Length: 114
Image (cartoon, rainbow, N blue to C red; front, side):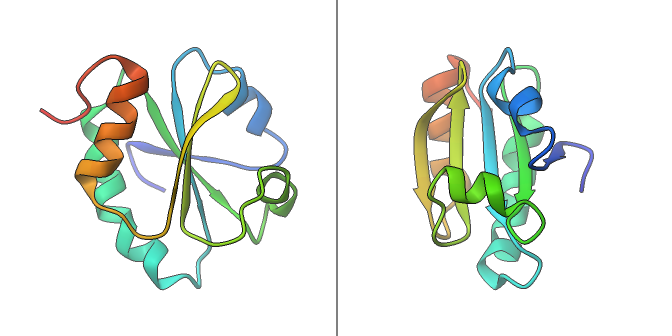
């Protein structure tokens, strides 16, 4: 992935996301998805800025379909912010860095982008 964005799957989702001590933004994506690739630079920029306050991880829906199905992900990219084991907010489709940062700031209590 990258230095600032982690990777999760069906096997480690509960431990890495639901049991996390800080908010976690999950990017549900796939290799073949053009908008998912377009979203990557914005996610990388926000992930770099929000280190310590929140995490951003990616879940490949082709490899981990059970988790995507569990959360009703029908279109990608879908971003879901989890905090304290619960879904707090969802963004479906291509979005910008400012919108991603706003969602994280709202739940992390710290500015995501300086």
